[in-house]
Amino acid sequence: MYAHQSLVFEPQPKSVTSVIMKHSEISNLLRYDHVEHNKTNTWYFDKLPTTLQFPSLTKNDLKIFAETIQREILVPLDTCTWDRMRLCLLEPAWLQNAQRQKIQRSLFENLITHPTFLENIITQYQNRDIEDYSSLEDQETLFFTISALVSVLEYITTKQDGHEQTRALQNTITQYKNNILECIRHRQRSKEWEPFIRGADWLKEELQEDDGILINFLNSVAITPIDSSKHDNKEIDILQATMDNFIDRQPMETAHQLNQQMNAFKDMLDGIFNNLDNPTDRDKLD
Image (cartoon, rainbow, N blue to C red; front, top):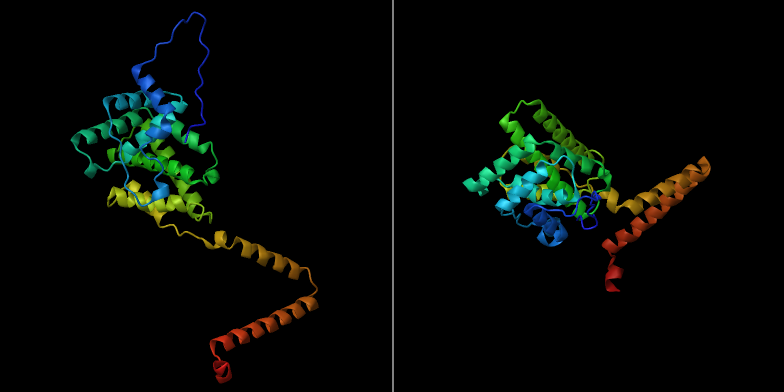
């Protein structure tokens, strides 16, 4: 997904003779270099319905998560880490043991304490026109990101943290969530968002939760009618528009004659099809 992004290394002062990388940074670099092989969610949308696989985390993963979240600036490596992190945020409590619940709570708390990371994630997605998310992969990437963000929103709401910084993050996620819903549900483009809509219905079943902000969001997306008429009948619409334009440019008398001729032609076709449906005795003999 991010295979075309490149790492940019800032030029070092001449006095620097060597660079020492942390073990976690080396591990993250290796993951970045082989991102397509290590992705846990290797495109679910092309094989729905399927089973969502949540990652098994190591201590090194948690260390990478913490370092990533606490950075002020988002780098390409961080987007790869976010791909893994967002699935951890979606894992339902009923599927977790005590240790995994503790890990998830720690992750939520770290994100809330350092909201700049999520704000940078949202900014990255907002910098791309939401209308451009046309491919299956793009919609899946956006889908898991917004779902993970909403799960953070639900955690904040449940915790009832009144801190100004937390409220700001809550408002940012809420606004972004509503913008996506507006795009999908109120712009008559639901056919183009069909993978996203079907993905919401699938994830809702996977999570097996009855209520909550995330489930309500998935329900709001899943019940969106998929309007195929405008997409599938595009050629018919163009033909109709051409005919209407032609008739509009004709004198009233000519338009009236054309209408009579078309009605006569329609009556003739109706008669032919009626005879085919109701053959006479002679036709039966033939």
